[in-house]
Amino acid sequence: MGRIVPLLLLSLAACGAAAPDEVVCTMQAVAGLNIRAQDAVSQAPLCNAVVTADDGTGDPERLEKLGEPDCVYAGAWEREGTYAVTVTAPGYRPVTLEGLVVSAGECHVTPVQRTVNLEAR
Image (cartoon, rainbow, N blue to C red):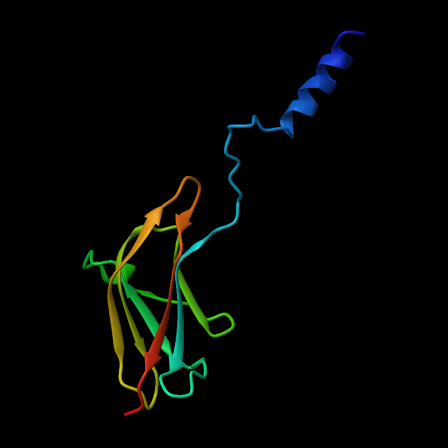
């Protein structure tokens, strides 16, 4: 039994250490799209916009309405693809951004961030 304890301690110590060339990925989900909508003149954030992302598959279930924490619309969580993003807000002309490419990184998608300037009608 004297040999079991040191081996157990060695095994437990190895669990927390990564090899120098080993990649350690987090359990955090990353939004592939981060869109900020703002007034084109004042640059004031528009927190009442509706932002949708279409991945071009034609599947209506994959047409995603992006969530809005702190006036930044986020979505395509850990989902790579090429997106068309449409931004609409009351009193403004809609804007569509085409060809936003969310690519896969080593652990998570690489986020795409854009600011969309909406012009009043």
